[in-house]
Image (cartoon, rainbow, N blue to C red; front, side, top):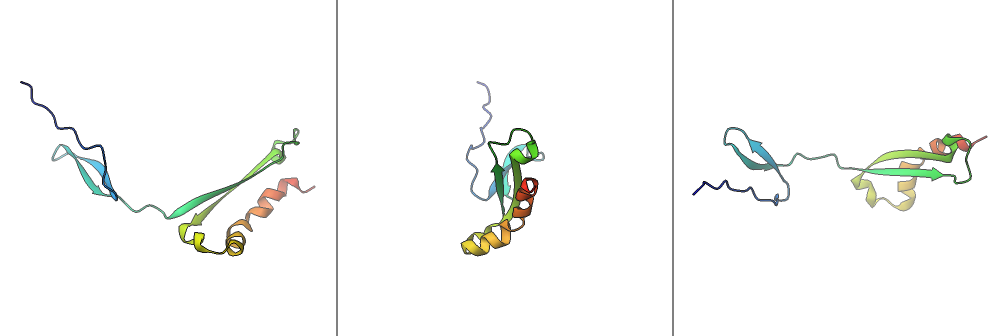
Length: 95
């Protein structure tokens, strides 16, 4: 009978990540490193009637938002994160 190699569990416990341990020659679970607590907010302004200038047809702006800012009021959130996006988005459309 052949030796069966144990199959590592497929489910990774919350807060852990699967890593190969070269000394033990097996997969182990270690604490997952903390990631940045940022969200990505992307704003796109699209003008479907603009066919000549691609810079005016679609304008994108991306903002990194700390997760804690989701508790701000709507007005405070807009003032803090989208005020800087307005000149970028409207810039190509000003004549």
